[in-house]
Length: 323
Image (tube, rainbow, N blue to C red):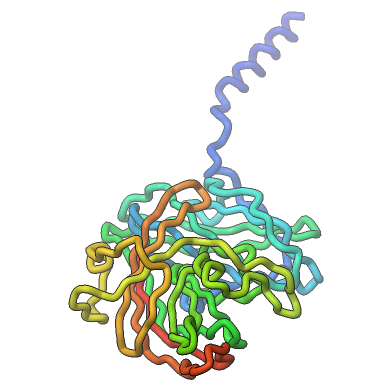
């Protein structure tokens, strides 16, 4: 009996000295055994998977997700950040529903935990497929003491009757297809149409403004007909009212812009620079105001004397916006 109590005491002491449960960052990362194909929609990140952010910036990133070589399709996504590529790290978002389709674009916008200015952090998504397997995609986040901005050159949008897509996200660089609009409407902050009768004018406008002006609100794409394309983020546009040197634009320049919350549509001209601003709430609940600039490079096939739709109307522009 004495031996029994002695062994019980030793076992109890062992448990009390074994330390607390491991922190989330200490949990080993499970093997990713899924076959889904995941790419960043920004090809620059595919070349070099890193992004510089300050503690004031917000991470906006977009993924193209295709079915696996084994026929698997995505079901849900979780978002993490870690300091060690072999550890799970901290769960930021969970159970993000994905469409069970062969291919889709999915954008994520989130405030990252404060990370200082000297160390790398690893941001990654973990996607579960319909076979219960996991596929991951990661990017290095490089902290900076300076607030950053995003730039995308040579973006082309088409008018409302064009075969070229008319909606763009300045924070992720995506020109969204009709099939992806239902999942990503809040990211659309620049759209294009020709407005007016009898003279149709090239116009930048927010996505909510399209319905107000009588433009179509239901996708007619043969692969995803019936998707509602109305709603999304309110965006305000205005002509530039200060001298802008495009090559010298920085976050400081963008932050100093004064953009009235007045017009959600604006007639544009080739060679001109325009300001825009939107306020979005990130998935983790932070309200973020961003200011940006659009430089119009070219406008093609816009003139209509009868007020009818112009099927080949295109605009090409460069954009810079705060992160």
